[in-house]
Length: 474
Image (cartoon, rainbow, N blue to C red; front, side, top):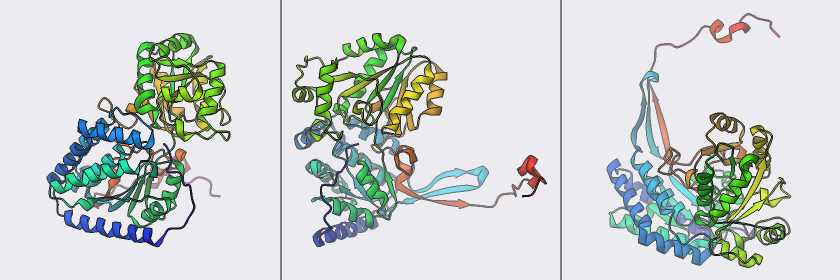
């Protein structure tokens, strides 16, 4: 995911320190006002926020505003469905009082607010991330202080303004949701250090800052989604879903397919089908030119090509792109950090690798690709061979694996799979994160475990120790 990249190491100003303190005081006061709200009341507020941000007219306006401001992403407001998905998940769960009972363990769980949340917003998702964070937070009676990315601050600020207006309309305190109107790295760091919890949906630098703030934090990891297509795949369906995933919001998401690992027996047929779906296969000379435009001399992604339409990238490269082509296909056989086409793309470029000699070789290629970056995030597979699916799941160093699904539309949950809906995905210790799951409602609350006595459940030492009972003493 695109980083909130630091451009300066200046110290926090007195004004910024006052701003952070004032925002925190206002947020805590708002939480005090809503602490007596019941489940029906907060559910209604969640619905109001979702409507305000995800209705078609507003979604279209904000999508256009985002592209006009940052140049990234698509003007098609397809991501509005994620807001509705998060609302669905939120409405189906309890977030206060008794939320779970485990009779055989005599355990009862009670939910409590997590507190004031500092939410770091990425440049690539300035609308949906604040909307989904707000729904989960309000559901749990938390307050949120949003820290926009400077390159998309107008869009995020407008999104928060809309949500505040929706709260006010329902008679709720607007300050449940607040926004730092003059974002900066020092201000974000101060907010993270004083809020009860940070949810850092941004790049590695800001995630590291969140974890070093001295306060609890949920971070996300970088993506480099790699998808295996074996000999049992439905070629036409796989190519269609890969295209849908790749061009979704111009590849802005860290879940968008970056690398395809294709069985040699179907490689040519699949490559042909992928081109029919709108893929432009670059030649060797164009590949060199594309690399020079997509990465700088230090192999860092160039900001002006992140999440841009294929037409914009083609113009920069000097490719005369046919109008029906919407993404680039690059044949690749080399893997490593020195080969950037095997690393994360964050755009409309797709690398394709060929494997032969058995499925184990595909798994080895996947593992090598993740050694270049993206460990912990996600992989996928198009296969009807359950043994292949099982083997990849055992071996892949990822937190989520999609089977026969459009990766960028499925990882964070959708209406045709069971993944928790979210806009923030933890990547486990592989990706430097504390959780290896989608950040969802349960991460926005504290839980009190109430335990009542049980009949004693104490096996004998001989039962527990087995063959080691009364054995040699060292």
